[in-house]
Length: 335
Ligand code: SF4
Image 1 (spheres, rainbow, N blue to C red):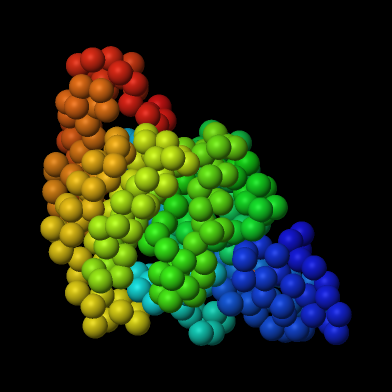
Image 2 (cartoon, protein in one colour):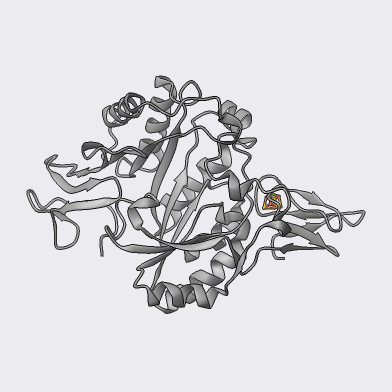
């Protein structure tokens, strides 16, 4: 494997993500899918998937990337994050990956499947694609050959060198910014915030990848007014006020079964803070609310894309990306 360092005493270190797992022969990393086999770290889920699904692109969520188009989504098993509130624990927290029924599919077959079902993109999603980087890159190469775009849905917890390679192949990304403090990341994600911020800056400043951000709001953990203000100010100063931000509702899961589902007012309040901080495109997700899932022109404030959750009801863009009322450009990739 490319991103590894052979250390002393038959130990090989995985250099994909900031965990830097040091693995003995036959030992799996934190993510459960990278394993030391005779000194070489191998991705054990290459060409294996938990299943394919066709979704609207809005479900990723991406609201400023090929609206209403179909996406072929797939993921594997495992995760390099340790989120206690994981919303996909049935695939990310598997103790024994050998006991999970996975389907075999090659990168070429994934691209062909997307073509067959008229999907404009394929999405690496459900579990974190950082851990199946080689499989994602090979699939992206075939997808691009068939004129299909690629989407990454990730927590962005990845080291510099693999990050630079991965994003060469990615057209759009939704990155989870799980909370805006080191304390939150350490306590609730068993990870750290800094590498995630580096990934966000890298995508925005050094690539052509379209970027949107999602923050899952958990009451009492990351919905503090000051924390949300700081997050939005950071986004504005480092990524620009045109970066779409989605606040989405948490449902009780994994180690957070005793917590409440996020109240709609918590989401609305966060959105208000973000708009006051100067972000232009702020959405509420995992709730049904036309007002907060629609896009408004950043100049004249008229409604330009009306949505009900994942469904686009009206599109008032002309010439693909201009507001029909004032001709200002709406940021994103629309065709
Ligand atoms: S990708 Fe997996 S094995 Fe590698 S450092 Fe991260 S958690 Fe450890």
